[in-house]
Length: 329
Ligand SMILES: [Zn+2]
Image 1: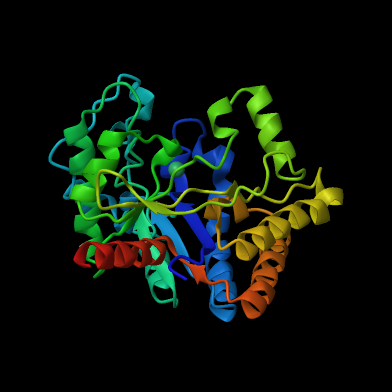
Image 2: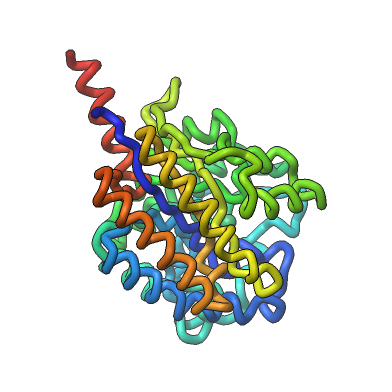
């Protein structure tokens, strides 16, 4: 079997850089601080159950302090017409360490992720870059990815996978990622509500779809891009944070995810679940109970059907290996 599919997890690790344009630190403090407990708990669960995952990490988080970040800025900074989107105009005023500023820096957490078997640290761009926002040039995007690769090298890693902030993707940006050494990207085709935007109808449909089988199982088949040596690993579903208001329906939500995984395993497909660590920043016990349920269900399928757990780079490497053997043959 060339591509038996698998269970893929990716997490967008961004702390305040990902919510900066629509929330203050004060408004989101509990979620952001809760990440410090959530990540070690998630890693421990993944290690015990042999789960592989990709942590698409904002490059700014690799730095231990503001001075180090300022000394490593990209050659070309993005110019956003909406100045609110510009992270370089919103650098914190102080920040001598991760302890002093746990909202903007996270090298110790990144080291914990790297020390856990099967975990890939990928990129969510250097600066939480918005590729399709009016303003930034393609060259400023390239410079951003180069800076992400550069700071990752200080942690002895070569970035291989990317998750585009706000899922803003274009052909040109994908090609630049491949040219800068990335081999996998997350896309959104299997997630039908993404196109609906963020209006009230789109949000309501996405919420309902987490509980009811509105959009099918959302299984995907990762594939090599037609124009560049990079593999598309589409997302299947966002793992919503636990909700007190909907707690009565928690078994329905879990049933929907587990049934989708069953279908994926049966038909040699991939089920790709994603979320942010800060989604677990509050109600950690309830969120961990949900994730444990999912992971235990995966273990059962894995035992019965040999359906593997893979991070995005592993998915891409498998596909590139097969494609290469075709070229050689
Ligand atoms: Zn993000």
